[in-house]
Length: 264
Image 1 (cartoon, rainbow, N blue to C red):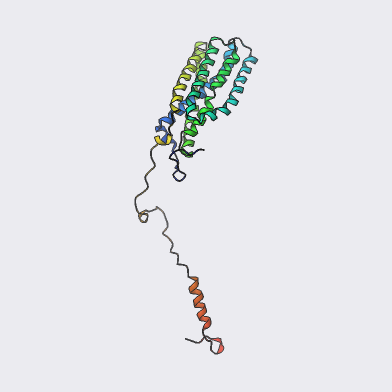
Image 2 (cartoon, rainbow, N blue to C red):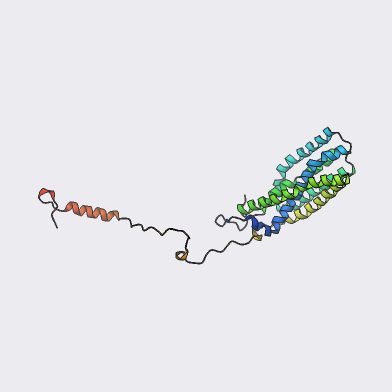
């Protein structure tokens, strides 16, 4: 991961997840992540049923959902190469939003004319998933802040995204048609564009978090640790040069009868 400005390996600190609730960037990225996931869930969960209700066979409708997936897979491998460049982020966002709008409009007005084109356009719009994953790594100064931002934004985002397919089913049951679904996805695309435009501005979640607690100014000798044992006194190590000198003097003393050393 590239080192962000202001980052230092010696100043990395853990980021509390709760502190991200005060970060506008974290909320915006969570909203963007949730909105793009909601689009994907509605496409995967309801496109085939919608086409069947328009008169398409089940096999053909299912094949089109498979085509949508085939478009998304290689796209997700290419999008990060452009998303890491600041000047390309907003143009890419506009392209994704345009593809979503064109795909949904085609399904609304002419669902059976060129359905392969409409689902392919929706697949291109789903490239916003790879884009937001890339932006997670670009909106934090340290690995800790990037991990915290990604965790929180994906957690909140998936909670939002899960409401989409359920809401489509409820609206269809109430109205008997798909007007509610199109209102939901069009609204989601507009909000996706607004939140995406905001997160494409270069900034860092670290700058929106509360600063670290200042270190204690008390002298180290005055800091007490509850329950700590008193320090154990360790005798100083004996100098080996003194020991060798003493042994040499003892060996040099003259010895009397019986081998006893004579007193000096």
